[in-house]
Length: 90
Image (cartoon, rainbow, N blue to C red; front, side):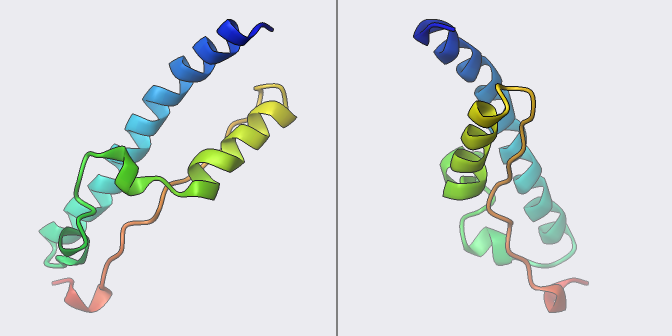
């Protein structure tokens, strides 16, 4: 696999995954806010900016290690969890 093909496959796979992870984490914050907890909103985590949700290990290093270690057959990762206060929920 040449470098151009590798970069193309990584960009085609990474962009939708980062977008999905971002929406997933923001949805957690929206639901918590709907039920009365404003912790995520106060910390600026209700943003669609993916940089606010990237965890160095879970979003970058782990998926890359799995990609290269398993030749692209297994992919797993995670983002920073959205904070919430269970005592603030209605």
